[in-house]
Length: 279
Image (tube, rainbow, N blue to C red; front, side, top):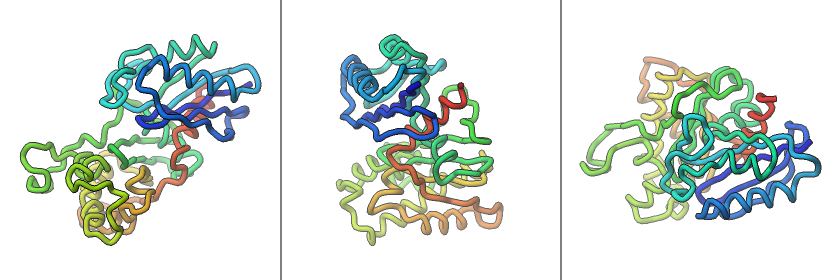
């Protein structure tokens, strides 16, 4: 039986097939259409071209906030024309199989917990720092229970109001995300030299967010992913560790901090794991 895995991002969508829920073949990648119907058509086309046998199930990572029953995108600033469209039901009808959806950061974390940097951890937290900031708590190999989802990027860090001024809410996302850096500096993060002082500043801001993560979720391991961590240039892991130790002082030990291993495939790995847990 074939299992369809997909990851719908704001820029690109990836579709892959697994025959055994232990590995998957090279994904098909395409630009995520602005229009919902076109997006569905391209996902189905890719799935049908990859499936070698009857499709037994499908699961996918989706950006944005999902509905409470996790069947459609409830809110997203980028995929605005996908919002409140019956994503899971439409795909289920087209693919003639059951379809599950999960937040992209949560599935990326699940993938890292089973196949990546968080493998073996009882309590793992995944944070992605890229265009935005997201994350999830993974406990004993499963996404922790939640009502509307995890949004660590929305936490307010009132480190110093002079950083962003009075008109921008000092959230972790507004302090360290790629889009925030571009708005603040006028430069794409990948165009800023690695030896620029901003990378250490970002490590300091991120450390304040990780301080809250450590106190709230008490993880064994924190896995950091996203282009601001795994790219080149990037926020250096050693700087993040140093600043996290400083902001925690002697109150509590810093858990192990690791860089994500699975990169663009993390959501697909997570979808494969979730399908296996639902079998």
